[in-house]
Length: 151
Image (tube, rainbow, N blue to C red; front, top):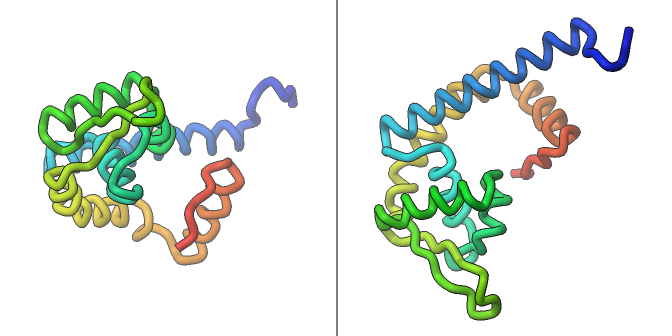
């Protein structure tokens, strides 16, 4: 077999992976929008900020955490800022840098959205897998560079 092409098994797994990933993302996106008026990226921003010291992160670090470009993050932060969920602050030690800070209103929105989001993630992924399969998925994600966090 020519290594320039995926074999039939690899192709099937790859295409299935892409379909599954797209389906899960779309389901979570629609669920959050319908229930809480948030995109999945906005939810990720609020969640990462809530876990950060003083509920603040440098914009560059936040972009890396939620896996979006800096320009896309700026757009999402602007929307969250208009709605009072996040504010931007200048960095004292870097005049070009900005902090994204979770507001109390943003924290309340996250706390309201989190239980439903967790339930939907669980129904789409974890309820469909055995404990052994969850462990295997953890190993696969780690092998592919996803470095899942340990409980």
